[in-house]
Amino acid sequence: MAEQRGLTGYRREDGRVGTRNHTVVLPVDDLSNAAAEGVAHLVPGILPLPHAFGRLQFGPDLDLTFRTLIGVGSNPNVSSVVVIGIEPNWTNRVVDGIAKTGKRVHGLSIEGRGDLKVIEEGARVAKSFLQDASELKRQPVERSEVLITMKDGESDTTTGLGSNRVTAYLVERWVSDGGTVIFGETSELTGGEHLLAERCVDAEVRDKFQRLYDDYIAMIDGTGANLLGSQPTQGNIAGGLSTIEEKALGNIVKMGQVPVTGALEAGEAPVRSGLHFMDTSSAAAECVTLMSAGGGVVNLFPTGQGNVIGNPVQPVVKITANPKTATSMADHIDVDCSDVLSQAATVEEAGERLIALVERTINGRLTCAELLGHREFTFTKLYRSA
Amino acid sequence: MGVKEPPDFLAHKDGDSVAVAVRDLDPGTVKGGYLEGPASVTVELRHAVPLGHKLALTDISSGADVIEYGIRIGTASRDIKRGEYVHVHNIRSARWQNSVA
Image (cartoon, rainbow over all chains, first blue to last red; front, side):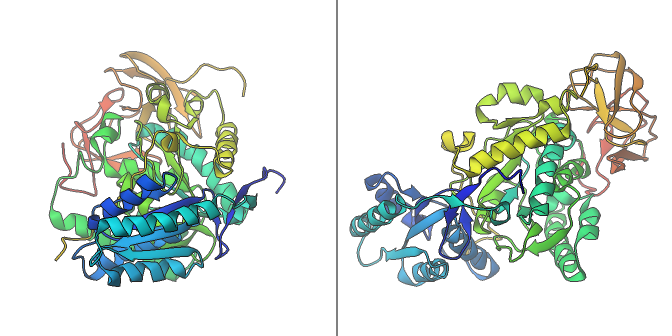
C-alpha cells in the first residue's frame, strides 16, 4: 500500500467515490435540451448533458435509455442533479432512480408550463445545488474505491505493442489493491473472446459473457455487411491494423493477466471488485457514456492514431505509444509512452508514469479532453423508436 | 535499461509470422526482435513499411493462418514471402467472412 500516493475524492451519500464534483442538469429527452441549456446559461457552473433521444423508445431500447440517464445522474462524479423532461411520468422515473443514491435531485416537466418557467425554477434549484456542492471537500480515498473504466480508440498496432501493455501494468496493480476496472467493446474481442471466456471466474460469469458476446456478433452477422473500414475503422487500417482479430488481440492486451470477475449489461454498475466486462459498442463516445452510467469515475483511453474523445462526467486519460501521434496530436495526449516502442523505457517504467498521472487526475488534475471541452454524451440506440 | 540500438520492428511472440515496424522502414536489411524470446532477427525487406504496419517474418501460403500474438489474426489471401509488406491487400479476417478489401 506504500505506493498509494494520497488519493482523494468526493465520498457520496451511497458510499461511492467521485473524482469530480459536477452539478448536472439532465434532459430526459431531446425536446428538453433547450431548457437544460437555458439553465446552464443562467448558472454557468452547471454541467448540461444534452443528447439526441428519449422519445417514443420502447422495450429494451427504452430500458437502456433509462439505465443510461439514471446511471449517469447517479455517477459519483455528480453531486446533484436537475432533471428536465417534456412530460412528468418519465421525468419522475429518472428522478426516482437517481434519488436512490441519496443525492439531491429535482425534476421539472415542461408540458403545461413552457421552457421559460421551467428554466427559471431550474436555475434557482441549480444555483442552490451548485453552491452547496462548492463547499464539499475532497477526502482521502483508497484505490479500491476508485472505479476505473477503459476503452481503446483509433487503435493501431502500437496499441497492442505499447500503450495497452502499459495500461495493463496499471490494471494489474489496481485490481491487486482491491480495485475495480471495466472494459467493454464487445465486437472488438473477436478472435480473442475465448481467452477472456477462459479467464471468467465461474460458470455464471462465463455464460453471461458468452451470451452477451454471441448476441452482439449475431446482430452484426445478421446484416451480412462488409465491416472493413467500420470495424476495423479507416483510422485503424491507416495505422496498420488489417483484421478484426488483430485489433481485438491488441485490445485484450490491456486487460493484463487478471481474472474476469463480472459480465455487465450495457450501463450496469458492478457490485463486486475486480475486472469486469461490459457489453458495449466499440464506438468511443457510446462506450464511455455507458461506462459513466456504470459508475466509472476515470477512464483510461489508449489511442494509436489519436482519438480526441472526452466525456462530460468521467475524465478521459489519453495514452499513446505511437511516436508520430505523440507529436502530431500532442494537444490531446496525456501520457506519451512511445519510448516503450523504441525500447528506451520498460513497460514497468512507463506503467509507473501512467499510474502517477492517473492518480494526479483522480486528485483533480484536468485531462486534455476536459481542457479542450470534449463532453461527448452519446446514447446507444438498439433499434428505431416507435 | 542500458543503451542499445532501437529496433526497426518488434514481434509479440516467438513463432509469429508477422512483426510490426516501429519506425518508417525502407526496403533493405532491417533488424528487430521479440517482446519475449530471441533478441535479434534480420529481414531483407522487399517493400517500404510505414511505422505500425506489418512485415512477414516467414513465407505464408495463400489460405494459411497469419500469426501475431501467438494467435491467428487472419488468413493469407495470396502467397506472401518473408520480407513482404503485410496488410489488407494480402490478408483477411478469418472470422468475418464478408470483411474483405
